[in-house]
Image (cartoon, rainbow, N blue to C red):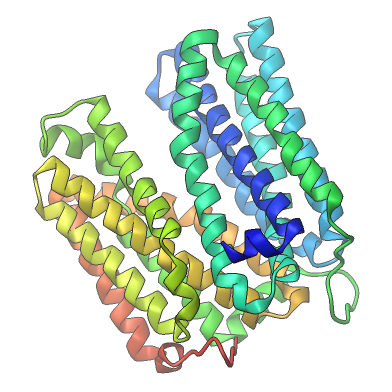
Length: 401
């Protein structure tokens, strides 16, 4: 809790992000409900995610480059204001009962673009707001705010939508951005440090990552977890085939990793005392893979939920260390672009994982897909450890990218 107690700017920013994260998840639920009500099609509802993917990837990369060129505070303000306006538009179309699915798709795409542009700037500001020794704790707190949104947001959104309609969730989300706007407004100007030669280039960021083996390995470890060990596309089939359940069972499976991640972040005080952060990343991702493989072998619902929560906890530990390495080992003038690449990995990795798990399940069975995916994740981590022994020796007291 030290970053919150000792840094007023970070405290305001964290609170604003937590509130807006809850609001955004409420909006995500409301959009899905509206699209399904209008179309009655699961395929049309699934297209909502596809509409956000391209803007996240494209604007994530360029948003990172912009964040390494301009005042990050101003960029954060623009992004938060844009997101608030999109939520207001969504509220307006719901109140007017337009009934146009294309309007919802377009709003989701614009929303993803504003998020991708501003998120690298917000993340790159954290190392300037807290001292280096508090960065692991700050990243743990950021994980708490994210998972609060993932767990609390859909619940509140569901209640509001059921009682007052989708417009209620959109309106609450619109006003929730006031907390983020206030926090950004109170920050000092935050231009990137270091010498700049012309405009920041996306390709320069990719070249920098290619030439920095420790940072590159941290990204590859995350991709291994997301591609091989992410069975979320199989949850509907698993809910029926493993447990004889229904949509409520799917909801439990989806929420279990987020609950585990939230618990892991809340009890992460010990993380600041770990200096061998590279070894910790690999151990955490391997634990994720083992927990997912165990989930595939167990056909007891509560044991399965426990394994998914354990996987979510391991993912939180990995995320905290990976973010800390990226923020400390990279120079300030590169942090925005690296955060942009991080958004691409986070957005694209799980979707590749959906394809991988679905393809293997169609050739074999959901159980085989989950188990082999978890074990493949562990195998990939062992290969990374063998190929990059320097990553295992990475010491936070002497960070090298």
